[in-house]
Amino acid sequence: MIRINCFVATKEGRREEALEAAKALTAETLKQDGCIAYDIFESATRPGVMLFCETWRDQKSLDEHCASEPFKKYVAVLTETADVKIETFEL
Image (cartoon, rainbow, N blue to C red; front, side, top):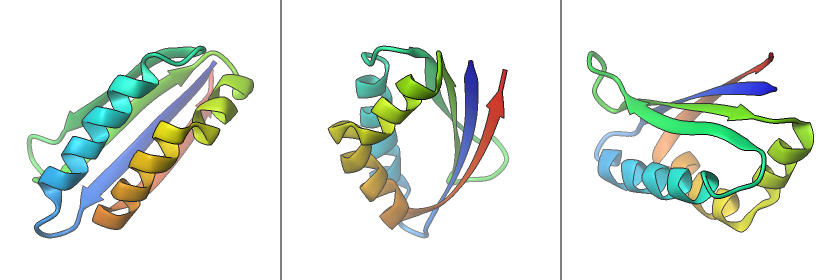
């Protein structure tokens, strides 16, 4: 299994736009084969900071996710509206 923590720090005035893209990406991703868990959390102490927690069955599933149209569409919005940092772990 593969675990990904994706930290998203929204740019000033772009929180709502980033959050809507994050929610849409989450809804679409949960339908994908190989997705074990996928959710987004917002910090209680740092306004505008969110965390995607993802768990994937294997690298093939993750690669298919990254090549999917929803991923491309919503990640484009997220990278425009926020700074993104990704941590990947093999379980």
